[in-house]
Length: 324
Image (cartoon, rainbow, N blue to C red):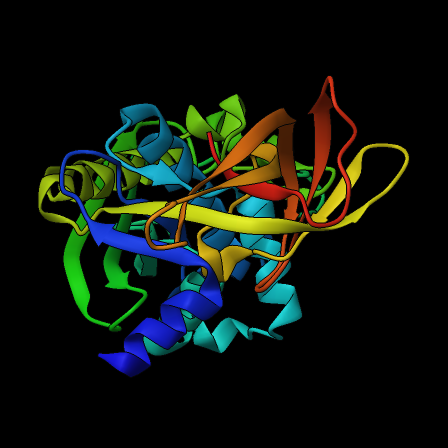
């Protein structure tokens, strides 16, 4: 018990299980697509990170459903880059749990794409993917045969504290249409934007492959949403200090993701005043706090964070930073 207390004190954070009071905070890793990479290259003429596309769609779906509090993708990408996280680690629960713990989330979603492409035997690969004389995709081309797209994904939600798998979901989507290819009417290469494949784009969503992708993602999200009520939720109390205060209002705090701070948080900045003493025992009963303003967190690291101050007072080193 003494060791646990020391750890909690060091992190300056109190965590208590409180179901129903706060949504489970989750992050979504890019999905692993190693088993279907050859199919991806054949469809698009080059390798595309469909694992990131699937993850982006799942994030959008979970955010819109509202069952979870979903961490911003930019914050996750930053941590992944700092930790030198490889593509081969995408589906590893222990590696993902480590990333999630640094982010300060309760759980992290990892997943794999197990099927991606066509599911018929009439049309064979031809044309060498993108390019060629027609500027169309080789798969399907201008054939009038019916094309059927199938996408299957699996997802697991991992407890970032224990590495335990809290939930598992499987999504499958199918779509078929006559006189078209996997990537839209006639197989136009408009599925690829200037920066690569964009699964959020309407032209991809309206293709039969896009329809199958969205079905698979929606089914997966529904299954994860159904488990939200049984997930661990935590009330995080942040109690930190201002470590640096720049003239332009930029504050650096001595608490970060390990203390539950995340990008977008708004924390109260208070100045500690006089102490109220118990005249009988001499013990401190309370300390008067003066509200100065608030700080909106813009960057988070493991043991520190950066934010922008707003308020009527002038913050300085040593001011207290707490939940509002």
